[in-house]
Image (cartoon, rainbow, N blue to C red; front, side):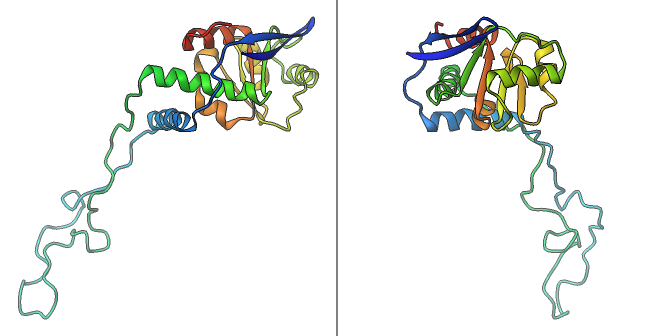
Length: 205
């Protein structure tokens, strides 16, 4: 069990949470690889020798020239010719088992909890959509911009207040993912996001 700090306008308390005790780096790598593969646009495209804009005429006779034999000028050996086995538009996404995805997300959150880098927030008192309001709240919460922060909250006003800060990445609860957790140093979640996380991973708060 992990004891996770919960911050509210009335002060701090702790919440006991059942999270994985061991983190499997290879499983996290698998989930991140799957995520990034899904994000690839897959629009890279090259032309084969049949698609380049050159004549298909044989450039000189096969024999008696003293030169190597060649066909048309669109052959891959010539500058400007077609590409052999070059990229074509494709879908890079693949299927990863749901249980692996759930385990990866739980392990990523557990890793932040183990490091003391996970903070739950009951309410963002005084934050109503303005960046200066969020900065004032963050200062009181011990967030000064020296570490990158992943802020996961159901409040659109809070996300709007924080999204312009270069050290904050904002997400709605349904967008919580392993890649963004691992690429930031701190994880801050409101209780609505925490409950959504528990529901996704099958845990209990």
